[in-house]
Length: 328
Ligand SMILES: [Zn+2]
Image (cartoon, rainbow, N blue to C red; front, side, top):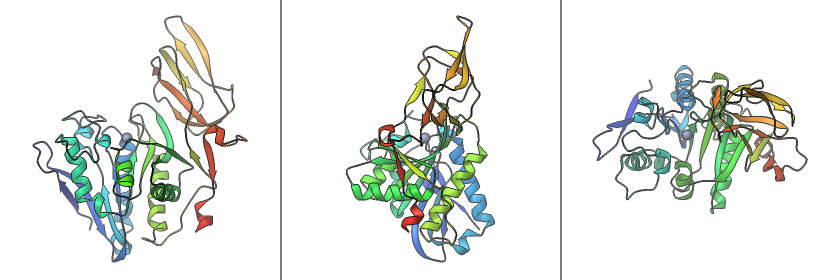
C-alpha cells in the first residue's frame, strides 16, 4: 500500500505540507526522487506523476524495487490551486529559490525544506515540467553546463537513460533546483520538459513514463529492458521564429513533424490590414516547439525547428550521441 506522506514546511503560516510517496524497496539500491509541479501551471508533469503512481500500484512496485523512491506529485501547491507558474503567496518562481538559505520568503522555505527533508537523501532526481502557457514542447531532458565536469557527465548519462530523442544542454541559473543539486549537492538531477499550454498530451506523457521506467531499469532498481530511441541528440541552442505583428495563427503542421525550409507550415492573419500570409519554415528540420493558441502577439515565439540531418550538426548547435546501451 502506498501511503501519502507530507513534508512539513517549517516557519510559515501559509503552507502546512507538501505531499509525497516514499517507496522502500525490499533490497538495497539507490535513492531517487521524481517531482513535478514546481511551476503550478505545468500539468503534463503532474499528470505524468499520476501515471507513474498508477503504474507503481498496479505493478506492485514496492515488492520488487531495490532502493528507495520519493515521488512528489506537486511541489508548488498554491501555484497549482491558482493556475499560476509562481508561488501565489510571494509571487516568486520556486525553481529560482534553491540555495537561498538567507531568504525567509515562503518559496525559499519550501525549497530548503525539500532539500533537507527529501532531496539530500537521494542519489539523483528527475524534475518534470512543461512549457506552461507559452508553447508546446517536444519531450526532452535538460542538463546544465557547470564548472564541475564530473557532474555534467553524470547528469548527461541520466538524461540519456531517460531516453528522449533530444537533450538540451545550456547554462542554467545557480538557484534552479537541478543546477543547485548538481553543483552544490553533487547529485545529478535532470529537468524534463513535456508538452504545455494547459492541455494534457497523453502521447507525450507516455514517453515520460517510459523515461521514468528507464531510469529505474538502468540503475538496477527494477528488472526490465531499457527502451531508447535509435539516435539521441544534444542540443546546445535553438533558433526560434517570432511574429512581428499580432495575428490570428493557424498551423497546418504539428509538433514533431519534419518540415522543409520554405515549406508552408501555417498562416498568419492580421485583422488590421485584412491580409493573410503563409507561415514558412525558416529551416528544414523537426518542429521542436510551437505556439499553442490561435492568437499570437507581436514578438512572441511562433515555433522552433531542429535539424537532425544537417551535415554540420555542431554549427546547428546539435551533437549526435552514441546510444547509451552500446556503452553499457
Ligand atoms: Zn517549469
